[in-house]
Amino acid sequence: MRELIPTPVFESIQQHFRSAGENAVSGWERNSQEEDSLTGDLGRILCNDPQTLNVNGQGWRWRVSYKKFRGRGGGALEKDNGADGIIQVEVTRRGETLFKGLLFQAKKGTRLLAGDLRKQVEKIESIAPGGSAVVLYRPNGYLGIKGTEYLHADERLVGPVDKKMQPLASFFDDFLEC
Image 1 (cartoon, rainbow, N blue to C red):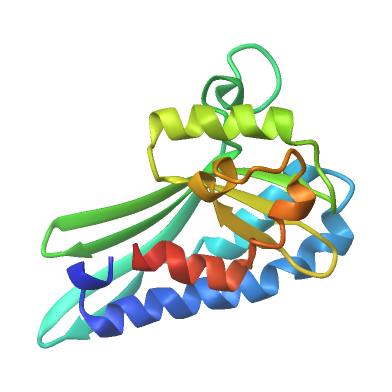
Image 2 (cartoon, rainbow, N blue to C red):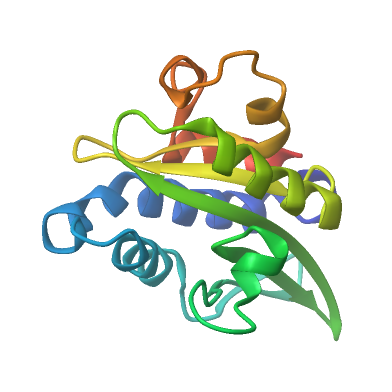
């Protein structure tokens, strides 16, 4: 994304994601009983009102949005695509809009059985190759890893894979770069 937009716009988006990534864990205590509550709280922190910047006489507008997919009941989108939701960056200049999205599957805890998670990430990757992530909620910080990196780990438990995971703020930096 960096090569498509001016540096001040990129840095503004990057700072927003860093701040959201660092502050997301503040919702752990009040939402830790339910993974969907943690995901909703993360989405609330990620979303922002449109921001406008003037760069070299041109107006640029950006925002981050989030959508949680329904995971329960008939016709639940999460069952079909494997994703808990999508995070999307939208940048507009003179009516031209660029989008960058990330489908993600979220889990909470310290050790997770990988079988179901692997199937979910494989579904996401079949829809959006290279556009998936796993987010892990923990009381001491939230972590992220690209879906492709998760799938190429040899271990059957997330425990060893989580050592490859990054704090969410750093993960979002990588997401914006590619």
